Length: 81
Image 1 (cartoon, rainbow, N blue to C red):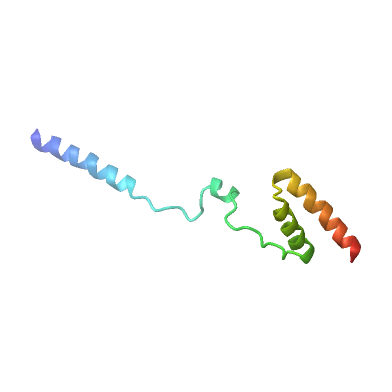
Image 2 (cartoon, helix red, strand yellow):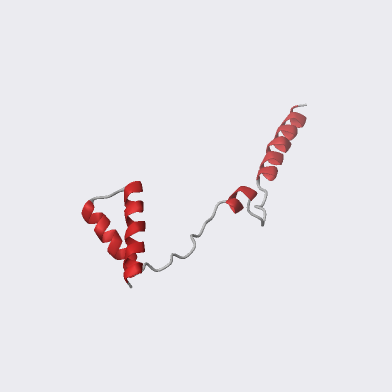
């Protein structure tokens, strides 16, 4: 009777160990496919963009004010050339 109980317990424990040792699938989970891992390459900055950024820095502009200033500045510089 004891031997049967011991064999049964060992069988249950070893079965759990075998089930837990599954190999990972070749395909990654679907959730990881939706998250981008690499950023697209950045475009080189133009001379106008750099100059307008320097001017915005000198004025201490941030956020929406900075975006509006840079947009107007770049349009003005492109008109001059």
